[in-house]
Length: 250
Figure (cartoon, rainbow, N blue to C red):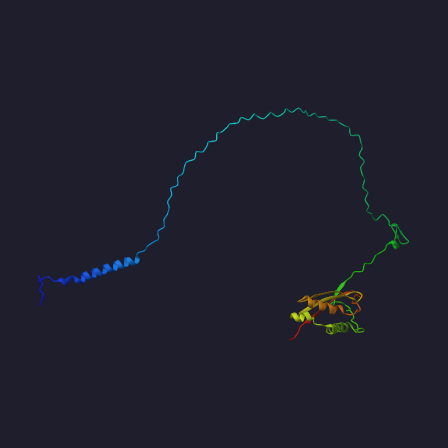
């Protein structure tokens, strides 16, 4: 059975696609608005009204105080009087005459029997002060003589001194046990002085640690007494330095 349209010339589905598109856009718009919608928590806030009352400030009255004028200064009653006395200068002033102590060629110097100007030559004593001169070992004329180096020439005595010094250090050398445990090693420079009597004095040292310095000073302190060095034929103090190496092998 076929249904017939009331108006066969009218097409119902002609604008259906346009209506569908409009409906779709409206649904998308409402969906977007629903997603973007935000809500916030509302808290109750008490709003009070602050009422300010004007305060009346009291005006402090100004008082004019009439102070009495200061008393006038006292009149000057002191009179200055001048009293001038004229004294005749009758006292004579004695002038001091200065005599020259210089002599000239006309004045003879009397000298007889070793007496000059009343002072005898034998009465004059001259004190000779011996200077304690210190000379370096490298420039000394006669180096100190180490025991066992007697009767040699100057150059041989110097070489013998240095050789005996090395033998003395090797003979008395002892590595400190504390330095071995701590791993301390290095070079110690020892400076000492052979005085005018041949004694060893003024021992000083410089090294990486006090333990090594103390041992080096002990070795030098065991040096024997020597014949003193001489400069211009006189015994003098001679400064000498020797390096001592402390090194251990594992």
